[in-house]
Image (tube, rainbow, N blue to C red; front, side, top):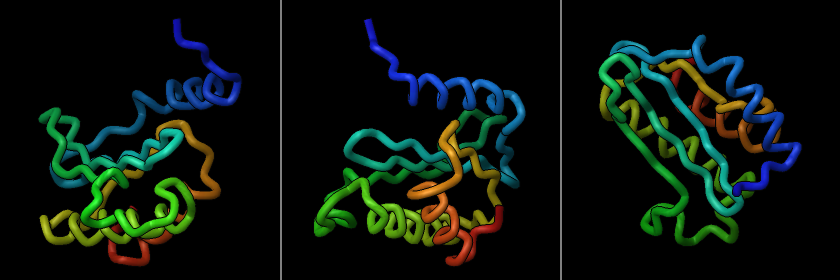
Length: 122
């Protein structure tokens, strides 16, 4: 049995309210962020084909091995830069941002602002 804390319960309720409203297409895929207790995960998804176009996480030692923490603002900024660069390499310029029920502040806001500043449009 998984214990759901009240903070996570509220996040899942927010996620459920937006679940059917946000979808990604081939022209404008969905950019999803997930934060665990230790890492940050990001995916670019085409919901029509049910295909992940690109994924990146702070578990990748090649890019994020030198970071002091893989969950702090420095990691959020770095993963925002990396996902923007990789998306632009694949020709993805415009995305729909799915914050996955998280409030738009802190690491989520810093990630989104960094990705926007590096060229992604959402």
